[in-house]
Length: 160
Image (cartoon, rainbow, N blue to C red):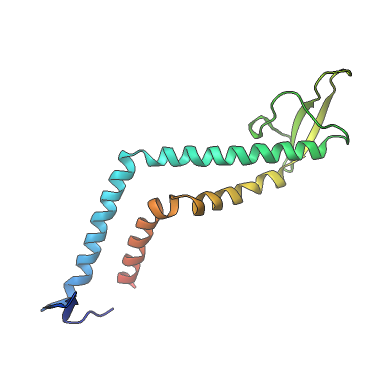
């Protein structure tokens, strides 16, 4: 990368006697702003806030997917369950399935309990969509990762 000896900003010109200092100066400025960014990030407890938001989004999607898979595995005609069935309550039986005891509500008939094997793959695949959705729809990329990415990019340009 080469810099010229003359710098023009808004019509004002400046002659640079030693242009070799410009790149190290810019890297130093970026390192300073990265350090300041980290301080704000740490002071605002942004990591725990982001983690909480992500876990909330993930739980909502996984719980919805869990209910959908439970109903797919129940006998035809079962349209409601009593109790709460969330992803966190699933029991792991083997590498490919979860196990859950699903109970139908009591009414005219006596409640029935079904032992249901729920496939893991359709539920676990939802994690990928949640991760990408969380990164690109929210501020996480632009506010929290972009400053680090820019500094890494600048340093790599300088090294290579």
